[in-house]
Image (cartoon, rainbow, N blue to C red; front, top):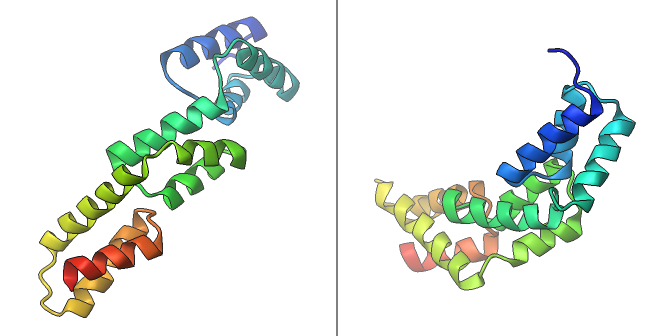
Length: 154
């Protein structure tokens, strides 16, 4: 692919950001991939942020709510994925705070109930350990999982 000029890359990045929510690190990678130098890429990101095409706080909020509601991920997994995108911990915490606590508990319960229906083990200890392992892999907090698993399995 032929490297893009600064104006072409900026135009393409603006179009990309207007279609869907992106964070600054994703756009930086795209700009570098399109052949811009790091200084030009930073200049482009700065302009995109000033013009509100990129807003990391808005991205975090949207990402947290989407991954929670559609993928049924817990706060831990969402937080890890956002850290991999090199986002500020303040923005990450703000995004995680957007998840309603009551809805969070309901989704965890739903995840555990669905998994519990699939389990064939009669031993309550094995059932509980499998439920806990499943919910941990989804990124939910241990203390919430164990409390709910206790009520489900008994």
